[in-house]
Length: 369
Image: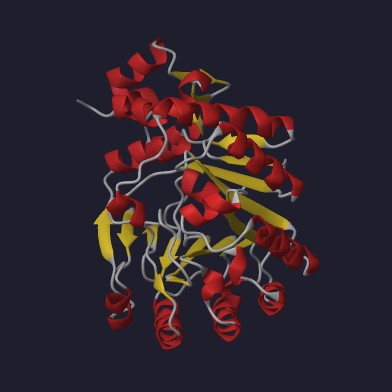
């Protein structure tokens, strides 16, 4: 990839929620109408200042909860982005089902949203309440119906496992329910408890490692049988419906990050926007910029690329950095290859299937001592 080209992917973070999930560690705050209006004005200033590429390939609106905005504010947000979305191949928005209605679904379709990522998490309504969700499984089915009625049928569902009190039967039922909605894509994430979340403050922990590993194995068994190919550690898709936007991250390409709580990567630098909304509103152009060395970029290219089931094309790595993978990582790389944890097949570097779920451990072995 030519690193001097303007990014072709844009992430916009909407930092508002109507309620706070007990496990959430993303930048968020309770929705307030006046604050959301001020945020839209700040976002407009940021977009115009940075001369965002009008020829974007993917746009992803995440959060928070983008659909926590009022219908009028959601329309205003999408109008801000309209000049940059004329030729996108994939235009995604995240949705909490209890915040979607007929009017908002119509607005999304009017502005060309082509893909929706809906937080199902679990089909167990009691467990949903335990993790701080304010919808039911029936609400998810209704959200899917609304979107499909408005021509948005590229739908991804998020599910979680290793939740408190969750068992294998509950997980299987959640997967069965998700499949009944015929999504094009499924993302499945194990619970991670951060200290500044409700769960963290209450001392709630995920299930034990063996149970979590068994659940992951079961997911990897069931979904391919239903026609979903695992293309990334946590992501499964019907053929042709892999997330184009997330592939930008996993291919370690540049992307814009706009709004409070967003991150981006441009021109050999990573940057973080303020996670404090008041700080962002005071100065929407503020960024914490982190220059990336060649060594940083080589390791992060491998770190992200090995998340993909297909791995990394070694010739692409050499073209990008002017040296081979083995030259870049030396003895640690040779050791992992000798141990069979990493494999080279058809010119691609992959994590061996037996170690795929242990990728973080494999990557730590790749770091110099």
